[in-house]
Amino acid sequence: MSTPYLEQLLTVLRFPSISTDPSHAGDVQANAEWLAAKLTEIGLGTKIYPTAGHPIVVARNAARPGRPTVLLYGHYDVQPVDPLEQWVSPPFEPRIEGGRIFARGSTDNKGQHMAHLCGITELLSRHGDLPVNLIFLLEGEEEIGSPNLEPFLKRYQSELACDIVAISDTGMVGPGLPTFTYGLRGIACVEVTVHGPVIDLHSGIFGGSVANPNTMLARLVASVHDNEGRILIDGLYDAVRPLQEWERTAWAQLPDGAASTLELTGVPKLFGEPGFTDYERRWARPTAEVNGIGGGYQGKGSKTVIPQSAFAKFSFRLVPDQDPQDILAKVQAHFAKHCPDTVRLDVYMGHSGKPYAMDPNSKFGLAARRALEKTFAKPTALIREGGSIPIVQAFRDVLNAETLLLGLALPDCQAHAPNENFPVENFEAGIVLNQHLLEALASA
Ligand code: BES
Ligand code: ZN
Image 1 (cartoon, helix red, strand yellow):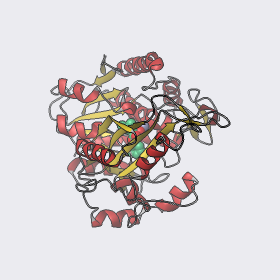
Image 2: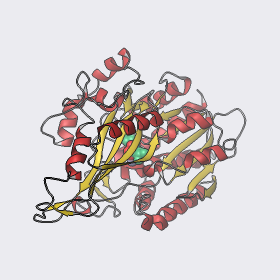
Image 3: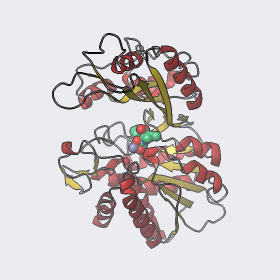
């Protein structure tokens, strides 16, 4: 491959652009400035927009009538790196081994948006212009729920008007298998705290006459599912759009999802809602996960204490046509109903994002699939994904544009986990794909 592109990717991977951690705000800013400088250098009109949080970078070519306007979106922020001790090499010192680039953000999303950037660079250097009117938008807050991007879309609605959005921030079903994602799950985050005594208590002196917040929290957590994995929150499934027959048939032809999940996760046995396959459970069914739980003594040895309080952090993944606000209200009602009266309950609503589904047979959907097939010379898999990119539904609501999801991550790229990695060949293929994509969209 042409080394300058790989060098550019390695350079952006060295920015520790962790959006959730205020101590890294300067690194996020520096990453944005590097991107803006590069986009200017390749000939695009570029601007960095400060926000209440991290900046948004927008680059564009000169618009010409008669061409579709394509908005490419990516995010240059990354997830935190802990547990750091599980990384084989430091997360912000990219290392290439076995054809893969190991670094935080390599797959999510720097490797993928740099494939957009380098594909554009190729087209510009070869033709002096692009086949479409381009708006390239890169944000630094995706991993914290994009709090400032939707207001930005509203404020600059007319400047950002476009015919179609394309994003590379999803996965491929396997190496070399072109994959078009036509749906994403939404998300709703909730933190629950139960408060017991006003101070930590001696569990010998008071144990027996005071409810233990840890135990009460465990009850609340357990109340969310039945023993087989169905969610027990009243009305939670009401708006779930049933899987269509063609999807079930298409997904049944894909590489065995259950076998791959078993192998990648190392769990002794799979667990999930009865009546659905592994892909169906992960891509088309709502879930409730406890992402964090705490209370009481966490140090070495034992300490005989009844803690003051205990907490659990939940995220709910949502599918079309569930609405995050409606689900949050139902979740809150559930916890209020199930919380024992021996403790006090606090429910804090975190960020949320709507689920998404589009028509993979739309004019632009078909064009994107042609570009994938031209790049990988294989039939394209049509899938949904379990992860969330909340801004995708906002592109539809605010800009009235659908989003094409042409992801390049592999199932074992370890996004959000230690030793995140991205295959060099996917980066190369992504650079080619982006050129085919803009050409296909131009003639759609
Ligand atoms: N790239 C992911 C989303 C994704 C992952 C889509 C896998 C499809 C398959 C994105 O960067 C991400 O991690 N999103 C967060 C959103 C949240 C923080 C609002 C997620 O899904 O947890
Ligand atoms: Zn992510």
